[in-house]
Length: 351
Image (cartoon, rainbow, N blue to C red):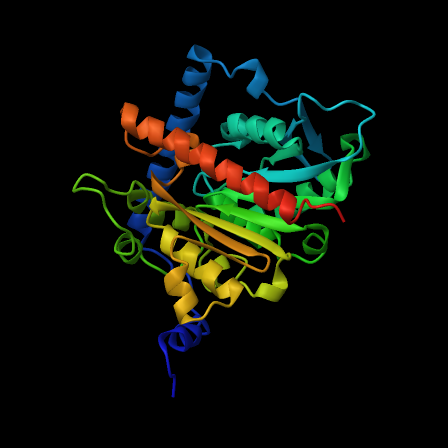
């Protein structure tokens, strides 16, 4: 007999659940919507970049593709203070968000440049193939191959003993997925997952019910697109509880030592991220109650960033207006401070 809710959840995790084949008209409609969204975002982003070019200080130092994935260029950010004869610097590998189907590594330019200069580290923003042309596990395989090639690149002057993989939203999911793969896992000191999607077994309604709301208009943007993204990313017949896909079910022994998961308070993905952090840290019921907004236990850390929504670091999905923008900037600056402190106490600490 199962004695408590955490043991019941553990039993539920062991039940397989497979991606179904959708009706043909639904698939056709999702195809049209997803490709329409992809085209619209590409066009809109190009127009915005033309009207408001990326500031020189936020542009990558270099673009580089590797033979293992010649069509996917990485974006390399070297801190401005870096000198050619300096000692090797820590490496942070970045993965952009976008539901596994949208955006590109270029969307992370500003925050990558900011982190590189603020922390004096080398950041490589990885481009990966996207749905629906490429489905799971193709994206994870791209990340693993490019991450390996980056770590092995002698021209980067990186400290190979201090490497962290991180990502935003879908990129956070891919970071925890790729970090499980033997060969790469042993070369990573840590993972940072920023407001990640982690559980594909839950419905959008279940996720929406798990978060607080500021007012009647404070609605998530994700539920409308979630089923479309999942159709594009997940092949029919795929076990949705595969930890490489739904990283909510990852085993602590299958990922690097240092783990930092960051959630946004007004985000339907926050609960699955928090529950994952609880499980990875092995918290008991009392510790879970006390750690709702944040905890650090051994090498696992969780922070719920207050007063913001999904993608708050990129100003993509939060409310408009000066107050919301001021709060977004404040919370982003605060969490970057925490991330930097954690990095150099943990995975980037001197060995």
